[in-house]
Length: 319
Ligand code: SF4
Image (tube, rainbow, N blue to C red; front, side, top):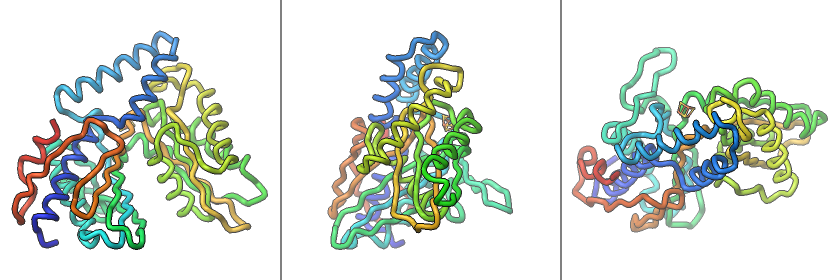
C-alpha cells in the first residue's frame, strides 16, 4: 500500500481504536456485567464481580489491557463500494494491528500453523482475519474489531444436522458445548449461535451474532425465542462468574440465521468471555468517524505525511 495522508490517518485512527478496545470493554458489556453483579447474591460470585470491576478500573487507570490474552484480531468489514480507501482497507488494518501491538501493547498471539513459531507481530498468514460485506453505492466503511482470545474461542463448534433432528437438536448441540467447554471461556459468557446450510454459513452467522449488541434480539420471533430459551438454559448450568458458581452463566445469547438447504440444518456456536472485546467504528468518505460501542473513545488524527508506520501520537491517543 502506498502511504498518503488519508491511509495514514485511517491507520492511526484504527491503531488507537484497537488499543482502546483492549483496555476498555464496550458500553453494552459493562452494562450487562453491572446488571448481573447487582442481581447476584452468592457471596463468592459477588466477590468475583467486585474483582472484575476493580480489574476494569485498574486497566483504565494504568493504561493496560483488561486481560493478558488480547487475542488474535478479527475484522468484519462492511464497506461501501464508493468508499475511497476500499482497496487499502486490509493493508490499513494490518498496519494498525502492527502499530497497536507495539503501542498498546498487545500480547503477541499469532503462531504460524505447522511451522509453529510466534511471528511476534500479531500478524501472519491470514492474520488478522477479514470478513467482508460490500454495500453497493455507499461511500462509508463500518468496521467491527474483535479480539479472539484462546479460552473464549475454545467452545466454538459447528456441525450439520439432519433436518429431521430439528431446532431441538440444535439447542442440544449448543447446550452440550456449553456444559463441556463453557467453563474454559471465563464466564459469564456471551454466546453467538448461527443457523444456516453448512458449517461455513452457520459459523459466520455465529460470529455475526457475537457482534450484535448485548440485549438485542433476532427479528424473527422464533429465533428470538431460541435466544431466550438458550439464555435460561445456560444460566441454569450455574457457572457464575469465572465458573465459581452463581445465578448467571451468560451475559446474553444472540442467534443469527440465513435461509438454508431443505436437507440440512447447519448450526454453530462461538463464545465471547466476560472480557468481550469487540468494537464498532464507522468511517465516512472524508475519514470522519463514529464509534457506537465505546462512548469514552476519542482520537484526533495527527494527519501527518505519508511513509512508514504510525507515529507516537497513535499510542498517546489511547489515554
Ligand atoms: S477467556 Fe477472555 S478473560 Fe479469559 S483469559 Fe481468555 S481472553 Fe482473558
